[in-house]
Each structure stands twice: as structure tokens, then as C-alpha cells.
Length: 353
Image 1 (cartoon, rainbow, N blue to C red):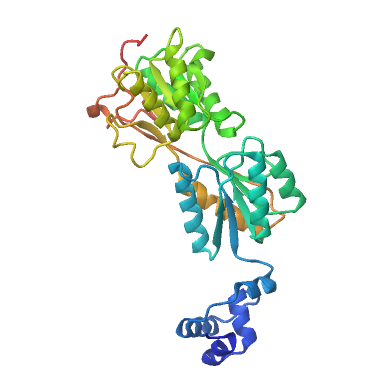
Image 2: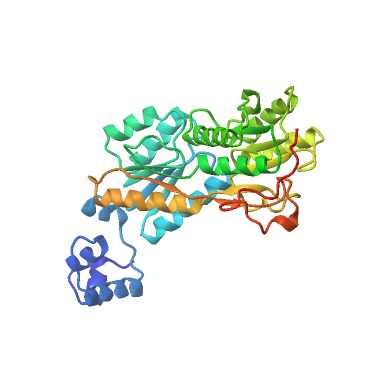
């Protein structure tokens, strides 16, 4: 197995110069740097990451704690984090906190014990213990998807305005009773999407009816139960918005069980698009989040924090896109007429009551 001494001999430089190239501890002339990298490639030299970390105080690794990794949205975030980290020479350690505050603290502690340079976390609904742990140990951290306050680096997609746009679209199609299957209480995504829902109702002069807001707890089974509750109400909705893709699956199951057809009997639109949403019949009208960009931005914010620990914290909100299909009740021929922005909705229909 090749050693640093072998690399130095092949490149015609000192062992110290090889170390500077590997650890980026001192500027090295481009020609010399290329000679060292060529020698490393020729000899198949594998740097000792443990030894490197002793020199640089860095392991060039990032910890990622994200719940529900099987959810397509978080899977795409993971892909964004991984590809961005690898491009910058960082490895990734991954853990799933299962949206449990105690488990969240445990997995972040384990990641820290693996000496990651920093962590990226999609926090639970009760992150106080996690925030205290990170602050006490001065662990560089970025929060994604769910916000925890302006004192921290964080990145998410826009939440309120896209849901407001979904309400706009359904109201313009004539719906007067629009239900929302909301996510896990306590999450910023849940509160912001509910705020967008209420703003959309208010804009169209529609009353907020507590009976049309049901908690789906961000997962399919919870949404299935929530839709059954909505359908059993004295004045059930004629259209439903689901607040994430897992809950969309639960809503579809509930509607099938109830013998209702989308969109003939009830319109369905969802926050959060996914790769197979257009495979359903009808295709699901949805809000598409920039999930990979959320992940890549989290890596960028974390590396900026590592290089400049004293910079002010940043909150980045990324825009979403409206994906117009037919589950809302629009005919396929009308899909070329985007409802946002500019023309708020397709040609109106008679009110649906």
C-alpha cells in the first residue's frame, strides 16, 4: 500500500508538501499541487482520514438527521444534501429521528460523537432539547424544512402562499367548502400552511369553518382518518387540500373506501408533488417543492458557517411551483392555461355546494 513518502518521491516534493495539498493547510503552487495529485492517482494512495482530522480539526463529514426518509420529499432532500456534500469533498452520516424529540436528541448526540463537522436537521415539533444541546456544545447546525427561529441558519420552501394559491384555484372553480388535511401540530410547516389556507378563504370571502380543518399528523394513516372525519361532518367539503404527499395517499384511500371519485364527487389537490403524481388517474394537481435545492442550500449554509462562525444567521425560503393536472376538476384541454400568476384561476364554474 502506497504511503505519503511514496507520493512525495513520485511527485518530487517533500512529505510536508504532500500533507499541505491533502489537508489544505497552506497554499501550494498549482503545478506542484497537480504533481502531487497525479502521484496520488498513479499510486492509488488512500489518505488516512483519522490522521488528516488530527491536523485540520475537521473530518470532512456532515451529519444529517431527517425523519421519514422513505417519504419521497425527504428522499429528494437527502439526494440534494448528498450530491452537494460530495461535490465539496464531504461525506455524509445519516440518521432518522422518527419525529420523536428524545430520539432526535439521541441521534444528533451520536452523530456528534462520530465527530462530524456539523449537522443538518429537520427538527421535530418539540426541538427545545436539541437546540439546547447544540448551543451548549457549539455544534454548527442548519435546520431544513421546519424552522426553529431566526437565531439559526435554516432553509425551507415557501409554505403559506402556495396553499393560498391552491385555495384560490379551488374557489375560482366554484368550491365553497374547502377542507384542509393539516400536518403534525407544532411544526412550522403545519402552522404556515394553515395560515395560507385561512388567508385564501378570507380573500374569497369564505368563512373559516373549524370542522373543515382536520389534523392528518403528516402521515398516511392519520390523513385517512382525517378524511373520514371530514366526510362525516354535517356539511362535508366539496374539495380537499392535503398538506403533504404521504397524507395525499391516505386521503385517496379514504375516498376510495367511501366510494367517492376524484374529481367527479370531490376535488383533491395537494401540497407537495412527487414523481408518480401524474400516474394517478386523474393526475394530481399539486404544489411542487424544490426539495433537492433545499438539501443543497442546507449544505452551502453549513459550510459557510464552518468557514465563518461569526456571520449572522440566515433564513432562506425557496419558491414552489404550481403543477396543474386534473384532480382539481379541470379538463385536460385547459391545463395549458396556468392559474398563477397573472390569471388567478380558470374560467369560473357555478358554485359547488
